[in-house]
Structures are given as structure tokens and as C-alpha cells.
Length: 122
Image (cartoon, one colour):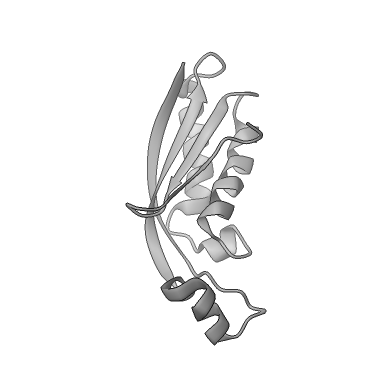
């Protein structure tokens, strides 16, 4: 059985490539080339046959808070912190703190219309 828990954090970022001009960044990223923030909802799915939320909740919260709790994602994630990059970055930080095979899905909701899902190698 799979159980999913949701966690919400506010963080900000700027989608900006320093190798491009301001005009090129504006064309590529639109309004997101300016600094802005989101209230991110992170949905973490665990295989309950492998791990329980009782054992995992604190570890998941600590990882997510270090990365997302009122942070600048340009600093914590590095590079251009797109939703695609963020979901993989979070996966790579959560997987080692959980039992092997426990993490089976991750969803990063950036806005009411935008979300990114990742399931590792699956």
C-alpha cells in the first residue's frame, strides 16, 4: 500500500541564466525571470510495506525544511531552480534518509496549475 503525505513551505527563486542577457532571460522565462516566491506543496509517497510514516515523518520534514522553508532556491538548489530540477533535487535528498525502496513518488506543486512528479528510475 502507498500512503502520501503533503507538506507546505514558502520559498522564492528566480529563473535566470547568467549566460544570457536580460532580454534573452525575459524571452525564455517570461515573468519568472524576476525574483518571485511560491507556496510549495510537496507530496511524498511511501511504500508502507517498506517504511511507516511514524518512522519517516521527522526525517522527511527536516530535509524539506532545510531546502524549502523560506529559502532562496537559487542558493539551496543551485543552477536554474525550475520545478523539474527541484523535484529531482528533493528526491535525491529524501531517498538516502529513508529505508531503501520506501520512497516511491514525489510531487512538487508550485502553483494551482503547475506541478512536477518524479518516481526515480521507475
